[in-house]
Amino acid sequence: MNKQKTFNWICLKDECQDAPWKGFHEAIQYDYASEADKKRGVTTTKAVMVCKQCRHTMLHPYEKVDKSNSSLWKHYRKHNSAIPLPPMTQSTIDNLFPRPSNMSGSELQRLLLETTVTCNWSFDQFEVEVFRYLMRRGYPGYNIPKRKTVRRHLTSGAEKAREEIKSRFENHDGHISLALDCWTSSNRWEFMGTTPPQCSMISVLKSTH
Image 1 (cartoon, rainbow, N blue to C red):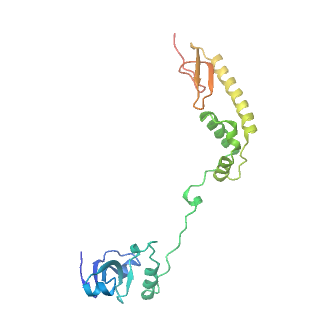
Image 2: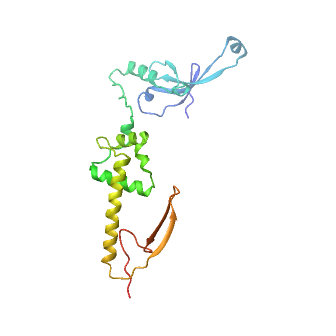
């Protein structure tokens, strides 16, 4: 650490090569808080920036509440007028999150139905304004369904699923064990049904003789 005393400040380091920092020494400045302290020889310290070209002393950005280095840039450009202003960037919520990929209306409808079943949503979920606003923000241009539409699609989807399961069972040439099952969902809905153990809507496990 280089401790070169000049006037009333001590240079601490000179390492950063990025503008505007490379045009200044980072230093500790010694000063008197009042005339009484000056008579007693009591000094105070603060972090400062010292221009390498004109020795102008400025308050270190870290000493400021907002940590702004705008004054450094202003003074730095006095000695380096050809340096362009740094580009101003402003993040928005649209920049923070990637845009959704192209999705058809039918695919979005299918995902909403699957989410409704998986999460045990009530149909009233699609009437909540905050939820509808979220969907409009995430999928602009799509028609967000309401409870009656979701109920209609879910009813037809359930009927289609039942027909598919029935067809799979009818075309299955192995043994299928059925069991009566009762369960309660996370939102306290109670269900009872006949289920094939270790089977699902997607596949039926075949057993051999």
